[in-house]
Amino acid sequence: MISKKVRELFVSFMEATDDSPISYDMETEQYRGAFNPVVVDKYIELGALELVDDGSGDITILINNRDDFLSSFAAGIREAKNGSDQAYADYNANPFAFSVGYEHFHKIAKKKRPNQEYICHGFENVATGLIHLQ
Image (cartoon, rainbow, N blue to C red; front, side, top):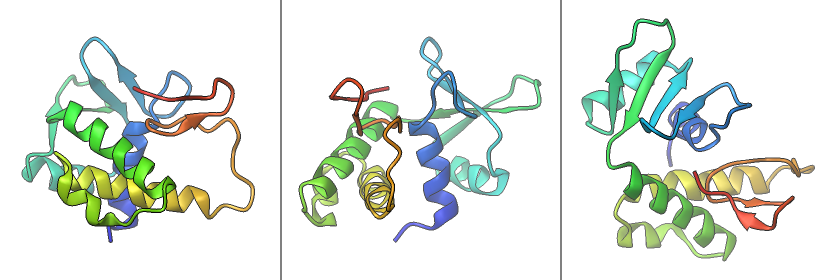
């Protein structure tokens, strides 16, 4: 099981839009916003994230092997939605990202009143009927 703070950090990347507290720049593939520095530092040390220093006050981050992270996160959501278990994480390029997506899907599914306008990588956009991809 992934801790709440760790899941929140990585989910905040997947929820990044122009209207969210965390922004994503498609050209540079950088995420910018206010993050928990303790969790960020841990994942920088582990090599999952890279800090980009721009001096603006916000933290700017790159996800290392972002494509693998995105596909595994979305696979975790898909398998959770299909009723599969987390054993499928072993077959992904990034088992950690799979588990984050898997657990996040279950967290969202437990809500009594799901937000119909929720936007997150790997989740279906109710307005369009398409899976949102970052």
